[in-house]
Each structure stands twice: as C-alpha cells, then as structure tokens.
Length: 239
Ligand code: FPP
Image 1 (cartoon, rainbow, N blue to C red):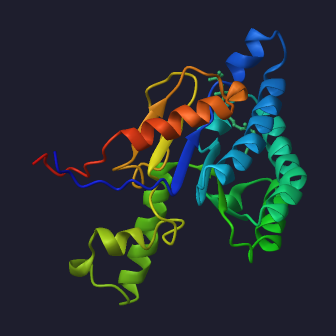
Image 2 (tube, rainbow, N blue to C red):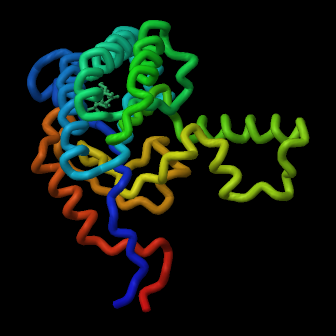
C-alpha cells in the first residue's frame, strides 16, 4: 500500500490530565497532585530531548481553568512560576528555548514576569523548544487571530478576498512553529478540551489511562512507538 507518510515526530503536544485523580488516589490535596504533575513536566522535557523531539507543547493552564477554586488557581499560578524558575537551569543545560502561547497579558504579575524572564534568558537556545500553553484556549486563539486580521483589513494591509488558510495561520500565536505531529492525552479522556484546535487538524492522537504524574519513560516510548508504526495519511487515499 503506497501512502503519503510523514514519519518524523518533530512536535509533540501534551494534555497533562489526571493530577486531581492522582491526588485523590494518594489521599493528598489537589495541589500536591499538581506538584507531582510539575515533576512529570520536568521529566518529559528531558525525555523529549532523548527522543529527538524538537518542539514540546504542554497544556499548563486553559482559559477554562479560571473556573476552579481561587485556592487551586492561585496554587497553579504559583506552581507555574516555580516550575519556570526551577527548570531554567535544565533548559539552559539542554539548550532549550522557552516559549509561551495563550493570553499571557492576563496572567498574575509574578507568573507573567517569571515566564517573560525565562523566555528572554533562553531566546538564543537552539537545541529544542518548550512551549507552555498558559491561559490558552483554541477558540480564544482563533478569535485573537480574527481580531488581528480585522485590524489589518481595516488598515488596508490585508485584502479579505485573499485571506486563505496559510495567511490565517500567520495570525495564530506561534506561526513559525510547525503543527504538532502527535498529541498525547493522559488519564483516558477522549476529548480535545479546546487545545490547539487549529493546529491538531492532522495530528495523531495517543490516549493513555496513566495519570499525568505517573507518566514515565515507558509511557513515552509506547506513544512514540505508536506514532512511528501508524501510517499518516493526511486525508490522502490508499492506493
Ligand atoms: C489537569 O489535571 C492538569 C492541570 C489543570 C494543570 C497542569 C499543570 C501542571 C502539571 C503544573 C505544572 C506546570 C507544567 C508546565 C508542567 P486535573 O486537575 O484536571 O486532573 P483531574 O481531571 O484528575 O481532576
């Protein structure tokens, strides 16, 4: 069977789900689950390097996560700041550039500043990319792009008749980053949860029952193996 295959796994996107269930299972507070999740975050950054992945996007905080209790939201924001501060050395040692996608301006000052510091200090690294999706929503990203396009049209910089998928993509949060090839979701849920809804159009999905804090090298190897053993068709027909 001759099919169009795009075999290289350059960009991995991850929905890190199950921190709450992990906490419940271990009889600890939800925030302890997120803390364990941050450890798993550190682990996957290193694993991504080992598996030759150039771009790793982690869904750290969604536009919907603000609906959680103030205690959990504040805890997550603090954890994000700590995650960036503690892992800056790991990023530098591994020559990884930190990026962010989402409505970053709306983050609390401390988290936003830590993020901006991390982005600034790693901007010349070229050995890999860690993209944190923070205050990110796929629909919000498309709305933000539409707003920028509307402004450009009003200013006569873009002709609505000439707008196509390629030009639209240029207005998304990180147009220079290739679309994800593989999306991993932990904790078994079969949902996209407003994650990269434009960019994941042709990605392979891998869902595991493993709770995010337990995600380890073995899970990663299974997901990557699964990717390389599946033929990617990009909507093309089998010949
Ligand atoms: C989903 O678990 C996870 C989150 C909402 C937050 C993810 C954030 C971290 C792991 C913090 C560290 C940051 C990085 C960048 C690694 P859930 O609470 O929805 O779990 P549940 O569905 O079991 O309740």
